[in-house]
Length: 248
Length: 248
DNA sequence: CGGGGTGTTGAGTCCACTCAACCCTGGTGG
DNA sequence: CCACCAGGGTTGAGTGGACTCAACACCCCG
Image (cartoon, rainbow over all chains, first blue to last red; front, side, top):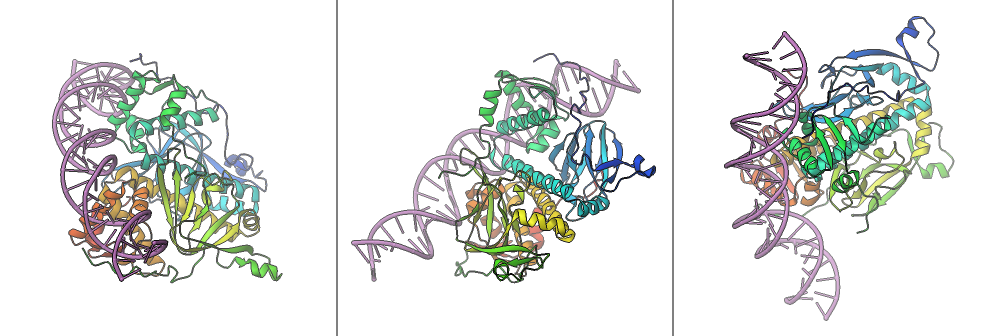
């Protein structure tokens, strides 16, 4: 086991980005009545570690873009079993599942002190009606969320415990890379239990899988600090990425 | 075991409905140059049992609304393992996962001889830019797909084999009801293997679960013919529908 | 110093899987 | 007409991977 380094808080916003960049002005601008046509209101909100952004069953008021920090979204069954359906990092948009029914089906919880941009949905929808490019971005955002869901579905339906953990790590690594962070050494923002609830595994199983990968020299694991030591082997273990046109 | 009744082909379109109703004119109308402004082109296509509507990796050309028949969508890993991600019945729209990346991530296969309406996507997108109401419908459609995905995710991550089968049957029953069919007696369009690939189970496990429910008098199962005999008990076994604001 | 939250590891259990046999039905061709 | 075969479904016996239960280590904080 490695010595556990200090859990220095990694700022999660090396490359500031926003799905609605260029279309959104903070409320301050609105108050000063300099709001330009072609933009929509957008209020900052700080969310403390463990606080809910919104909860399953809540009416849809706003959708949220993450500016800094991280979140998990989850669905809870009546008996308390929790399924984490995704993690949101800066640039991601939360709340899209509510657009159809006007009610949130998932609950989104901050994994650390975080900062979001609140987009009042009815105003946003109106703006989409005036702004084709914005509407198009929004469609793509939703479609990507569908595709991400299908990725998790195939993980849950098809993969062994180790494959799930490996696939999760590779996916997280890829997302960090896109945000401008190191894809090979990173800090997990979530507990083993969150990871397990995401991957359909118990926390002990996640821990065992990580230990196994560590012992084989593929990873260096020290609590939530992860270093990828053998990326090729990791990819081989995940191996079965979705295939295109089948040959059979 | 019941005697197996004749597999009479149930027409799947008691209540004709379409997500784009009122906005779409068949190509025939276009040829006659009577296409009104505010509508978009829409070509019928017949798909035979087992044929693909589109395949993972294909470029996005069109999205499809099911007019009659039924389909499964699936994701296949490199090693051939298949995960069914959903079933489409009349009124459903297939292909929404491709809008973001311009490539289909799933493959959609006809479960029987079926009939779809082909909507060329770029024309449709343009039309959405002119027609706010249409764009809004489309957003809801996509959002509902996200919500449905989250339902399957929590099923795969949290439920036992029997719970999965029960939840699947109740969901299928509800959809048939919405289409105007009997929710208590129906014909499954898919094989045990398709159901298993959807629920993350092997076909033998699906068969055993159905036999168990049959033996306890909760269902009457005869091949693909299903009759729900004790709906309350079935709901109790599924029991754990997603919960709202949690009390802990 | 005690306690709660988090993480690791071990021992034993059980549910869904694997492998296999068998049945039924519908289609095809001699 | 019947023989044959392939696809789909059911059931049984045995296995194994992830689970349950449990103990313990570590860290931060009051």
